[in-house]
Length: 295
Image (cartoon, rainbow, N blue to C red; front, side, top):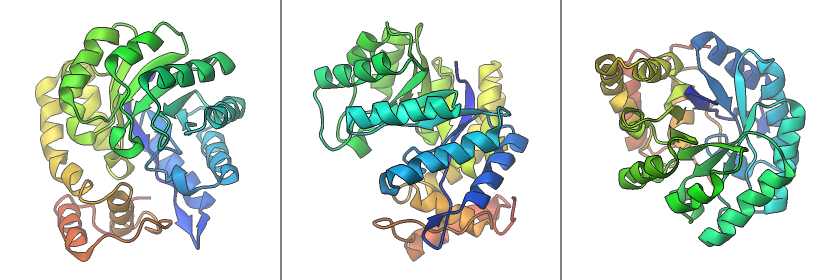
């Protein structure tokens, strides 16, 4: 089972192409900083704007560079069931430790359609999988009772919950918390989700403060709630600033300001507005991250 602070890894670009050198540097840095797992090719990794060859190449580079020093949960979801199966097979063949499989986006399947989709992937690829629920992105919300129907399949080891609804997350724990790990998919909700039994977070903020995110999660998992809450309070301004605009615009902007990567994104994502950038820059300055060049 995956536990701890797992980073929703950005995909660095240079001149419109994936910057493989910088991607490898990011992998090495997260190994040094104590991140529990790498999660490439999710929403933060801009999977929606990479073609199929690029998607698989990013997975291959991350898995190769990780070299079993750190676990890799490969983003392999798609709005096409056949494509999700193909990508999940590819991730397994490359040596990933598991797959993050997002609910099919845009075509908005029914709850029955979601069950059929996930069952088809699991029956085609025997591999540990984490269901990824992010309704604001996909247009569909996988309900706790639907996840419960899938919990009997060994392949489904966890759920990344980014619905933003604590009542839904609490119900999810009641239904499947003894059979599947539940992870925060929203940095702001990580502490409360851990407090009711969560096993970790798949974090955007960990792209720039991996050690601090690991401390927050590790202290909670060890039962040191006061220390974990202190970490949560210290990171709150950063979490807020990184949600000012559509992910990954703020985190890539932050990493650029910190001197880590070129903050290049692919259209239709555009640079952060000046007013929001100024707020973000102020938070980074206060935290001592501005221009640090931490890679």
